[in-house]
Image (cartoon, rainbow, N blue to C red; front, side, top):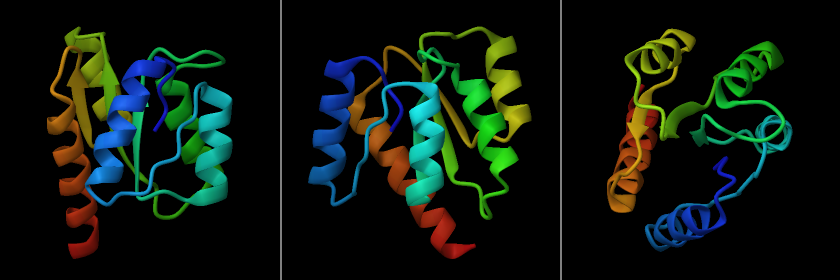
Length: 120
């Protein structure tokens, strides 16, 4: 998970771990890319507005790493503009969730992406 808002990251981490998921948290763009390169996650929950570089740049950097397969990505953001959502989807993001949202809904979306990946 890439989230610089500590309370949100802690709440989502708690719920995901309770659901049986392994969670690693990165707090900025560069550490998100490095962590993803190192651990090769199935899903990344990614905030757009991160220090270092933003979520869009994280997605581009992950693609440049040549990681195959690319992790599934759920963007969580306060940016609800259609142009941001369109840009994310064009980059290959799997899901786009605007704040405020239900933390439990995010966990369910992560589980759905993991299940979908296991089927493909």
